[in-house]
Length: 121
Image (cartoon, rainbow, N blue to C red; front, top):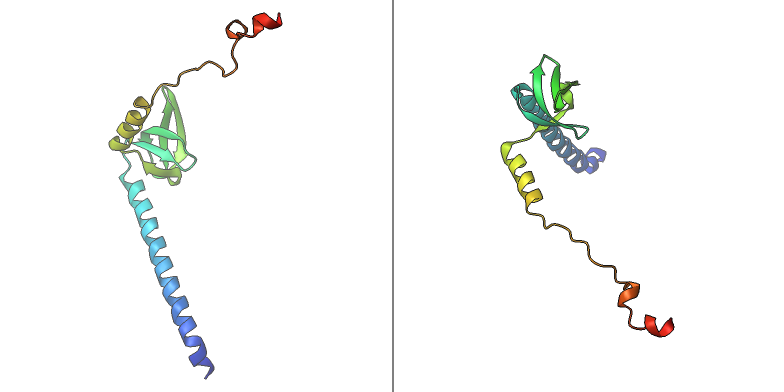
């Protein structure tokens, strides 16, 4: 009798665990595939948000150029994703199409444009 009461709960819990582990396995495999496909010259993001270009690769580490002439060593596990050429073009396009900001006069008029100033002085 007690088993019949808990059986639906056990089935739901088992299904939840199955689908959760399946999603985690897919994400882990995608990360492994990314790390195995890295090549010199790829632009990447690290997990800390840094962008750079790969200049060298060893078994566990990558050498990342973060500025001209500045090369740092990172673990491959720190690579979050590859920056695709389309991502770079979209970023450049969005920054180029932004309207320039203009500086407008303050809503408070200066002393020379105040018509009542001459009456007060």
